[in-house]
Image (cartoon, rainbow, N blue to C red; front, side, top):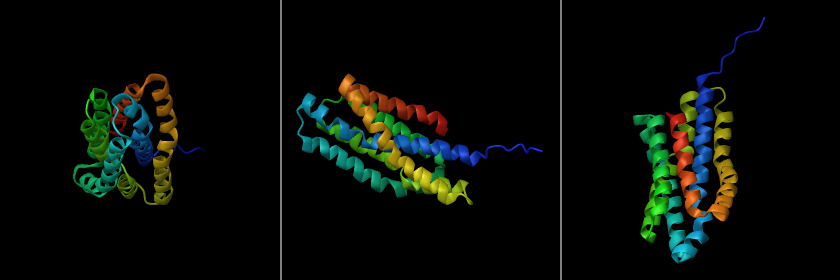
Length: 185
């Protein structure tokens, strides 16, 4: 006699969280691929472009505890959806940049806040709410998703930059972030 086993909704939540985390890691790391193309096109010093990456990393780290509090108050779906929209806006708006402060705002602030909202605090919130027996396994898999994002995204973004330019890569990042929003919702 076979028992009809349905997939528990927690595993769907974990799968969507994994996709969001893979994307967030890739989105956060993308500016490193854009350093030289932005330098070549705009003539901005690498130090100025690196400052945007530094702001991104700083906000990535500082945002996580606040994002966790916002997830408790407003829910995971809302916070992660807004985070993905911030990433999409930050990446998409870069194609209109004309000054280095705009890079700081787009990739530094918007993408930093967005990806920081989907950091390890997101993993802890998902696993704490949805898992008891397999919490360690799911935490490990979701944490690995963060590392996998860079491994998956960076080569693809580098190829896009090489073959189609940095603007195409920025738009692909924006589209990828937007594509995950319906899954999260």
